[in-house]
Image 1 (tube, one colour):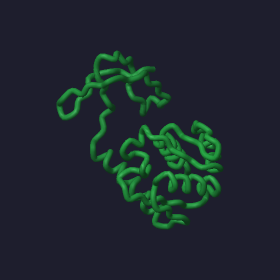
Image 2 (image 1 turned 45 degrees about the vertical axis):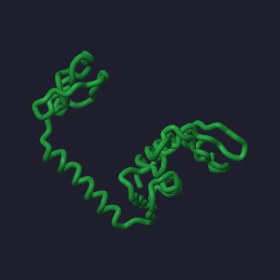
Image 3 (image 1 turned 45 degrees about the horizontal axis):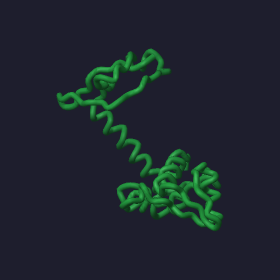
Image 4 (image 1 turned 180 degrees about the horizontal axis):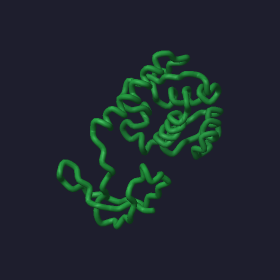
Length: 167
């Protein structure tokens, strides 16, 4: 089944949609969303939901996470490449370990997002490149070190792995 396309409404104004794709649903009839076809000319109408429901869902999960983090086996200060690598390695070694990462900035990644870092390579000295192999991040071998094409490639890859871990 594919999703019905209509013009999206936000505060009474239509919102343009750059593109969309066909969507399939395995939902049961009781909670299924009406499906149809995308025409790439209009917008998209989201299923209705009250803002209070969205807010409560976010707050409930935030406070649960904060409550769970009140007691941790390991607290890592900084969610840059070193902190994320530490969290990944510890979580993989002991899935039962409760790990909390504290980050002062508004986003994880440290210097990977600053300045021209989205275009800047990341240099990693051997044998630390074994982590790149494990994460299947491509690099150029330069002898005693390797070069990852973009620092953000490493950061975004390891961040996604850390977020998927249960601890």
